[in-house]
Length: 199
Ligand code: ATP
Image (cartoon, rainbow, N blue to C red; front, side, top):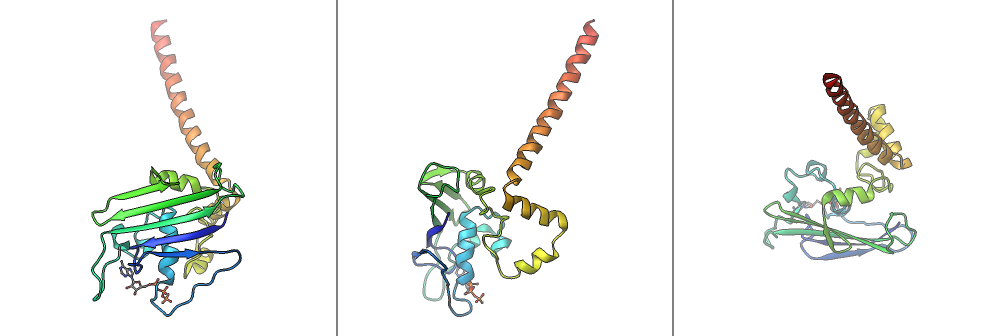
């Protein structure tokens, strides 16, 4: 499921609306230090549901909004739109194109959209869960991350492999089912107690 384009407006150093088209093959983004290359990968991660401001090198999430320069005033909105080509149906939705948009306003309010329909952040993270593109996956490898993987705890490494293999969602579903089972067991015990009391 290739990422076919990315539109950035007001995110970090991108004050001007900027669209990047990704054609078949490898795309290289080059530029001097501090020109915004990492901001591009952060824009992708953010639109896909990143929830850690620190993970985006900020203190608060609203820090991703263009903060202004000597030549330009700050903006009040950051917006990132990702266009995926879903013709291979890698994502379980019956549409050839998937458009994901995330917005944040200076007051901290956020908006999320899937194919231009308003949705919750959870809908976006669920969509990418186990697609191999989730935020715990390694479709995006940031600076220093390779070293961090080698130094991670074995259980954390296992989660990475499970997400990549597509079994992570079943673990989440299993945990939810086990919790339900435990609750049902408690209810059954209570019913048994009541029956014993009546008898
Ligand atoms: P390097 O090659 O050194 O890794 P880079 O090309 O990856 O650099 P980035 O780290 O993506 O560069 O961009 C850093 C630039 O983004 C800095 O100039 C910083 O001032 C600017 N920047 C970050 N957040 C904001 C913001 N909210 N508003 C305006 N500019 C920002």
